[in-house]
Amino acid sequence: MKITVLTLFPEYFETLLGSSIIGRAYAAGKFEFECIDFRQFTKEKHGHVDDTPYGGGAGMVLMCQPVIDALNSVRTPESTVILLSPQGKTFKHAVARDLALKEHLIFICGHYEGFDERIRSYVDMQLSLGDFVLTGGEPACMVMCDAILRLLPGTIRQDSFEDDSFSNGLLEYPQYTRPEIYDGKKVPDVLLSGHHANIKKWRRQMALKNTWLHRPDLLETADLDEEDRTFLSKMIENEDQL
Image (cartoon, rainbow, N blue to C red; front, side, top):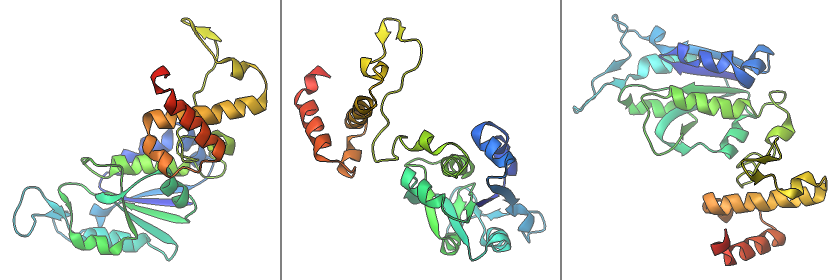
């Protein structure tokens, strides 16, 4: 995979490539990454990439020319072009999983008051982290790249993310490590039993419980079998004991 980021602040992404799991995967050649400063493409003699909006209003708007010229310099038939925008579809694990299969992703990071509306006609999709506004697209792009790149083969072991929250439509089950007892709080006995079938069943039930307690909306689309539904029904009946 190759990722290209069109941005006014290429230095923003140095941390992503220089540390932790993503940094090691980059050093090992698991993916290619480049940042293009679209200010270099402006035809304004003073280096401007933005201008005042027609019709008046506060702030400055990014102009078409430098952004689209930068895009055209890197776009290929295999590219998927993504505009970071509060108007975009909410980024979720399923989106990350789909994008991890693409050959070339191009992210366009905005700044200032927004984009010239015509830029939207040059992209394949628009994505947002949620219902809030950032100072620019760079923070959102960093988060999305992290979520996508960790799914690439060889970045982390596949069994490390198969049970992640959202990977199967549910939140993750609780995790424990040493010591067995801390501040009077004990690790559940089933996890110490060595009985793999019981552990698997417990983890499934705890994932269901966590999801119902914290994100019940996810259960509306989760793939549940009869055993799952029976467990949820009993748990809801005894809600006052949770």
